[in-house]
Image (cartoon, rainbow, N blue to C red; front, side, top):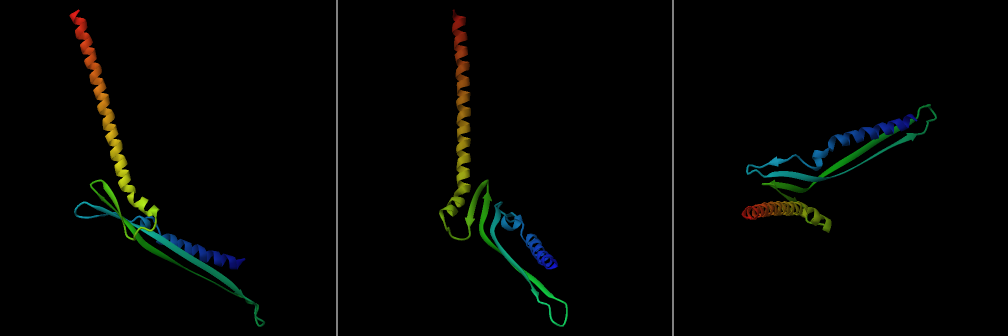
Length: 153
């Protein structure tokens, strides 16, 4: 049973060290602002793996002692995959590696699509406000005309 605690302790220690190396800033990096006002945010892919093991050595004929050993290892790879470029409210994604699939292309186009949808919604909002103001002006003009025709009688 004590042997299991050693292996568990080894695994727990490795996991804590891995957690310390990987945080949200490893995937979405800290923003960098250039002199012309462009903000660049690095985006990375993180891969990690680890392994542990342990084993018992049998009792020797000369002593009542048993041997136990445990060990582990792990590794992390951080690979830059893209950069988000933000200038004058326009967001662009600059991919480091070439597109691998259609999903990559959709993700790359997402900021442009969001900007276009936002612009479209803003235009529709302005159109609705203009129509509302026009209807209000027509109603007021109709009231004035009705008032004038009533006064003439």
